Image (cartoon, rainbow, N blue to C red):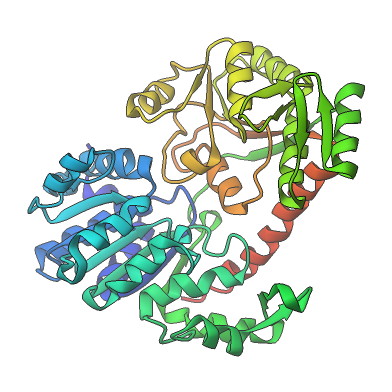
Length: 447
């Protein structure tokens, strides 16, 4: 059991910032303990009657594992009472939502249901959004739903280490939820007019923030943001990135080239077609990983290059390995090939088993294990079987091991072919990192 005195000074500073600012965006790097800091602030707000009913919105596994675990870990938080709304049947959820506990936990996918359930009788005057970048789209149902009840919300806290995972355009929806449009525009149209310009084909209506408006945009939201980076506050073990080049065999390479040129390939199991360029690049990435899907969701294995490379790494590592996969076909093939491998499912006991070093190879998708889970006790090797397009998922997944509490250097191994599709993904990740870093750096060491 940890004591309140065990909190780092920067965690206490974060808790104070939350208490002093009704609209607070904590852009805190993964692994700095933002959950404990936020719960410390929540306790203070409850104890001083500044808050009565608090809703915490987070990724599913984070609501069911991370937040409850933190409340049990810290002595000063053990008195906090909460109700879990995630992972329940509709009937049980209808009952749970009536519980009078001061804190309710819900996964972000259920926000539309919750807003519909309460309507204008919305009871939560305080809302915490863990990984607020999941509210970066104003077109998403979760964002539109939460917007309907903003008038009932007196205090909002947003937590993320990746506020602009794709572009600076990601900031407007998040900031709007904090200040109801006061700083960057109360409609998306006004935001686009004041800060953005169209690029590419005008008919596509693709926008980006104008370079000459970036600084003004950052300055507008400065008072809402507390930025903390791991390199300022933690001495983490080294992280070593490496790339294992995988060469597709001739058959797979021929299929790759045909799909790249013709949008269609013929297999013994049937014809595979790509309806458009987006589908095509997905098919190309599947080929790079060694299998390709048919329309009936079955798949054909066409290459074992990455599978062979992963098996060799697992055999020689002599330590647990966390594997990031992209397709379900990856999972089935890895489970059948790599001894001791296990898929991270919904059972929280799997996380405990991993952290107890009982699982040699843990398979996880970045979208489901990329936020909030503490996996650093289980190992220090990440293997990317295939890269995601989203920088946020890439950074967050790596931070499951490279975070506070890790005692060994972290190795991040990427299995990559030299095919153009994978090169494009890797380039996109690097480009997005540059964009996001420019935003985060603007708030470092200035507060």
